[in-house]
Amino acid sequence: MHLLRLRSASAPALAMAGLLAALTATASAQTLFYGAAAGNWDNATANWGATSVGPFNTVWSNNNTANFSNQAAGITVTLSGAKTVNGITVGSGGAVTLSNLSVGGENLITFNSGAIIETNATLTIANRIAFANGFEKTGTGNLSFGNSTDVSTKINGTITVTAGMISATNITRFDSSTNLLMNGGNAGLNTMTLGGLSGQAGRLA
Image 1 (spheres, rainbow, N blue to C red):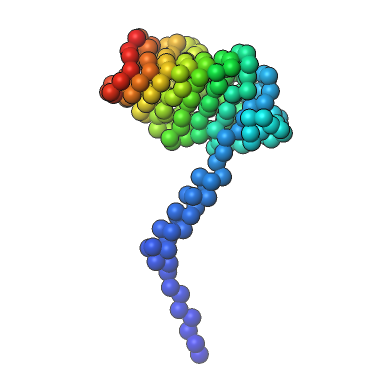
Image 2 (cartoon, rainbow, N blue to C red; image 1 turned 90 degrees about the vertical axis):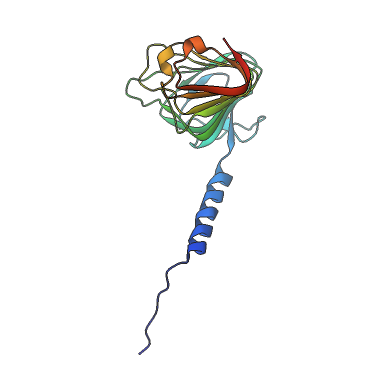
């Protein structure tokens, strides 16, 4: 009678498996370009594309970067349903406002860890928001967290500003434990309640 001996996976093998899983997840993340003049950001309408020139025949899927660089004029995009993003990009063509506040949180925007918000025009986020661990603000444009009446979801973690302007319509939109790292750009501190401030460049307004 032969006995079958089972050997557990070694630590290096388990580590390699975890690395491969992480690389696969990273490789699958992409940038989706919004191709509509205005309208809804939902989970059913095919108005996204894999390139800035289209075709725009893809439905939004979470854990990607939303790019709004095709707009020649300002638009308002109405969220329908919760979204999870790796970042948001706004081109220099026109301002973008993300709207549709929901008391129940069904239109919440969640930013994954390491999120980058690049604004080369003005981006106003009026929705409820959540950050895994802060975010980085890049681009020469403005980033404004609107909706002064909703303070139930706060901006937290470490905010790194490398360019442009960041502000909010209500000082309570920022958690008191938030750390602001200024490596460039401007910050409207009169609209922020912060736990820490550091950096090497930039201007405080």
